[in-house]
Image (tube, rainbow, N blue to C red; front, side, top):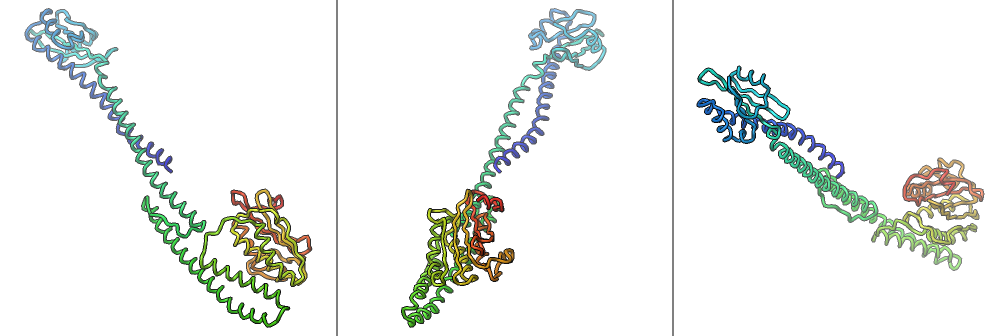
Length: 436
């Protein structure tokens, strides 16, 4: 923007300067020429009184020597019927034509201009005073004036560029601050605010941004309070369920352990909602999978479900917060337990590709009859479908990745969540997914 404004100011100021300075330069040259011709007329007029008194060559030569043009050899007097005094440059025809006229005239010669001034003497004779004006006299001071005008034009252009750059810098600075604040707010810094500065339009945008940020902060605070309140309400039925399990004796020990883990999750939700922190933008996918499989393994053991976790030995960085990845994995595993029979095996595989990582959740159930319908939000059926697929799909698409449904090697459904780890966020094509 600053470069564009600088170019614009140069173009506009240059056009304005040329519109004024070119005519002014021509006027300066014409003024210099008029001044030189006027000086020559004064030189000629100085000899008119002398010619009225005498036409002798010696007297005229003495009078001419007292003038500047005479001393420079630029003056001559043509006396009718007599000799020419001084150095003449005008052709004889032009001198005769001037003698026949009654007004001064000028003629252009090779080295300048010549002024011919006719004079009428008392004895009916005439004389012509010739004053030669060299080209240097005609252009005296012109080039210096042009240099001054050029300097003024350059100063005007540079001044306009400086002013335009300052204005552009102010606009760019305000726009960059607004962009930085928007990025910080998008990264989760809800305290980000900016001071309105710059042009009125950017001030209005900054004010609107601050109002939006305050509104978002209030809405998120209300949602956190609601989430904490709902989670807190779960404690009452959980307490009642715990008391019921205590009456069942040792046989209910696995259920009591599962209930204890559920209480821990509720406590975590309440703590996170009451004291929100900026979530990290990445996590160790292998660690998240190991933790979630350890949680679901108790229920899998109760239902007699064989399971396995592959590819989660070494750390694998995922470009999503740990909480969001945990929610997606829990949703997919919950679908497996919800939509397949007890005893159905399942497996989770973590795959790290060149520019994406994949989380593959497979089962040995009946599979998904209509994958397109299964991807619709809220759809459910006999296979691994439902809200969990929508949660996982939104997580994948937030990184520029995708979610795919396929037939698993176990014979059931396989849900593939591909998270893009490359710098750009273009969606993964099917061919790219196969290469990964």
